[in-house]
Image 1: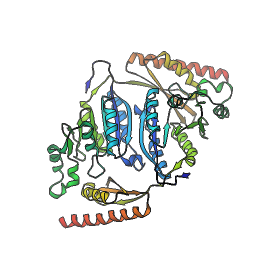
Image 2: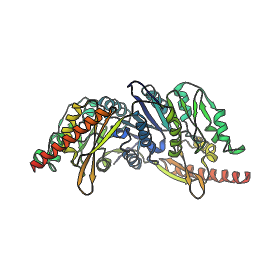
Image 3: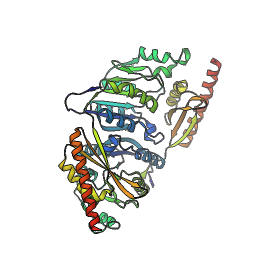
Length: 254
Length: 254
């Protein structure tokens, strides 16, 4: 990975393409996976969109996102059927021609010969001009990388193989560090104080995540995040001190 | 539900609000749930966006979506902490004032008395002017409905309770019907023929979903969708005929 020297954050968006996600028939498993992956390597995921298999929608979303973030990762719509129109939409968004790519054809020929490499499967070898292939060992049918847009499959195992392929080539920022503190208090009992800490520590971010402990009842996880280990430690200590005070006060109040 | 008389589809978007989804810390469980719910009642989910806890981002996404679709459902950001800014962002998007709402205060007073109804919890009673409350029995803290925007909690059990509350009040279109056919063929073997059917039956949509059967290997589910039962039946029969032909041809080819 090419860690960016200065502190400019490296940002990303995900564009999920597919009617099946919007109808609820298929439950997306890629957003959470890519989000965790990017966070781990120091890329800030800033936005996600899910759009249907409609060319104008894909082109519009892609153009909105690619000019705004360092990278756009798309999933879905690069299979062998008529509703797989992502490659054409990406070519249109970039204003470049698209055609059968000899490198992609060679990959598919490793698995499909003669009449098996039919028109449907050849669809998967259509790659916009100027793109690099993103290979995967699972299906052999490649994704591709053009400009700052990385086009991947929708099937999670194939998408994950493609992400492993591109991950080491991404430029990355300083990694976000985090600490998690179990509050042993209800979110509503600490919200005001946590907001106060957030104002006092602008260099850290404070997330508050309520959960229900079957044994002890309503509880809260506080997640403190910063790219600077010392600032993270100071903010985490401040949270722990705050929790002690609030709990002492609640106890005194009975 | 108020089924719309004419054939104008009723459309929707989901706006998920929350840093925790974008960092991958929390895996969204609401999109798939709402998608299935809307499909079942005849509302077409057309787009989803996930944005961070940043007011300008929420306002911009909300204004882009609410002018374009019949409904926008938001999830997240209506809890008691400093990063819960959805209600303020919605008020800003609509250009209306926001203040403590006596109806919301009365709801929270059912659970929290005296010092327990502190500033953090009072945050959850801030409701934009002109909004209707969307109650829930799980947390008591309400969501709200303003214009065509329905603001719900991010915690799945609470969101689901809120959706049950608003569902019967939504206008709905003619319900989308679907049939599912197991192809017993690989997606790449039927893609061309399926695309041909899609052109011949513009009144139906044909989705193709590859899966792996542990016993028999690569397989495909074909989902045919239409709002017209007769057209659905005709398109489904056409798929079954096509599958028979393709399999006979593959068998003859050896």
